[in-house]
Length: 97
Image 1 (cartoon, rainbow, N blue to C red):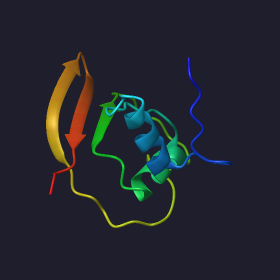
Image 2: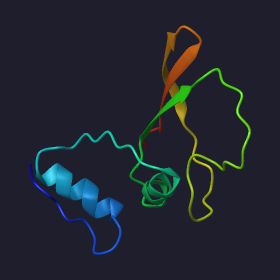
Image 3: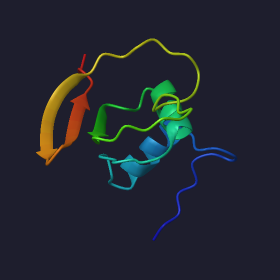
Image 4: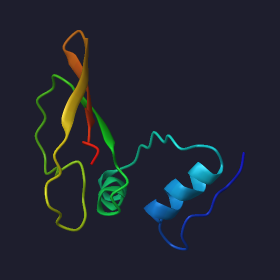
């Protein structure tokens, strides 16, 4: 395993993507919490979103899936749907310009 440092106190998303591409890893599947996803959105490095919808009703104080600076909404297109019983697995992509 190799450790790639991409920031001194937090992960720099642009540096992370470019460093991994340098190592021959241009396609990245990334998982993290709302704060990390928010930093990736702010850096404009998210081009796909895989979202699971589970059939559970749950209350609480949860926020959105991304947390961070207020940003303009980004349009995405549905690229695929998989169903496993009552669970939906959704894949969205950002349009290329």
